[in-house]
Length: 80
Length: 199
Image 1 (cartoon, each protein chain N blue to C red):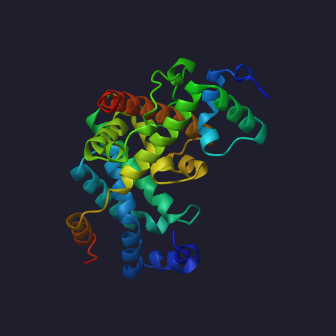
Image 2: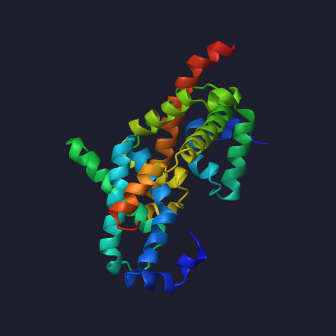
């Protein structure tokens, strides 16, 4: 069992993007998972980072092309 | 992207000026292009202008499109370039997207440790939060914003994002992490003031 000091918090941050995207090798991935389990602050950072991405994505999915904008686009392109 | 796009026939039809094929390209991609434009500029009129300009340029340059990337990625590239040009026109101190983003170790160190994941769903999803998210994305530098939008909102892969922005995959990863961490800080500040109401 690794103590969370085996991997300093600042080192973990550099790998956070790849960790969330599942792009790390299994050894580094495991080191980070173990660190997170024993470090409350990093746990909060990882969870809120993941939530931030999700909220931005969800919020953007609510953006739809308004009908009038769509209509003007077709007119502009002579596709009516 | 539909399978129809993956066979050469659709591209041939576009190259030969087939109006129906171009109409399909517009129908399938106009909403996602509008979304990127609105996220880049946070202004509906600007987003509409970029949307129109993207498809006008696509029509013009389709004969030069050789199919080395997906059509949707090619359209994203046009849209992002148009948005960046508009930003550059309005902000003379604009830093080119090609420039290296210097990231000091200290820039990424989290300042806010606020577990806002436990906030009620109706607060996380209300219109005030939506406005804050739009504003927070707008405060990112254009280079970080474009990377975040393409990768996390439009769902492009790291390689597709790199190709679209004409930067390396490692630059995409660096910019993406910086953008995500900046947005996390912004949302943490925003929610921490609201958590008092739920304490």
